[in-house]
Image (cartoon, rainbow, N blue to C red; front, side, top):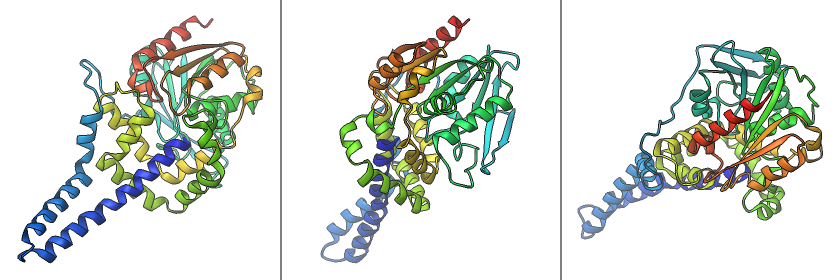
Length: 373
């Protein structure tokens, strides 16, 4: 998301400054040690040690300060399946697909959000795998999927990748479940591709997503729209050009906890556990910055507003009352303009309610799926 990319970039710059501060303090200690300014040198040494420790271990303090303890809460962790496929695409990318649950169960196809991978569905896998066939794809350049050779990260390309997954898995009467960018991918498939294989798809679940360029439906939408062309687009190209350096600084931000602060403020409602916060932050840190930036550039061109009334397939739209990246008004707009849509709102919830409020989200999805004929 554009706002997330901007905030991560700012804290990444700050993270680069810390090693220089530590080095400066160490040089001051070395310069004034065993002189009349020995007290000053000692303070510089302690400061250098403190900054160095913060660079390496700051996240542990940050997580403790901005997270909650929730008794009985199962904590998320990275997972992979022994059953997986790789689909080679015409653009040179390879799409990773992993399978969980009952092989003969009703299929659910999951499409994760940008800056994440299939691991973001941890709680959904645990909840649904006993009764359903779960099909999870990594979007191009993320997780175990590779980048397209032509550097095409458009929503149309991702929709085509999703269509390839549907056909490859021979899905019938499947539910498509997309979070954030995953929801945009699904809407692009049905709007721009006019996907008509209704035997394959039974319904849609669109979670914390939008129908248009997300700068128009996020927090500070007027400001973000105004700076899209003069600031955000050039910033994306700068991140692409400096991707290796940005990725190093991104890992530094993860280690010192700055990324955790951004993740908490923009994607959680405040009831998240330490592990949930760290898990989401880790997934975003694992995403290559150049891939994130190209995806954001693609979002600027995304708009399916006029096609929404043509999407008549049953759909559950899941909103969150505190979602800062796709505000509830985006979900309400989709609900009122898609003929067969239902709306549910998670409260309190933010953009990562699939982690933070997973019980409410999973129950709402389960109830919706069970009402389908």
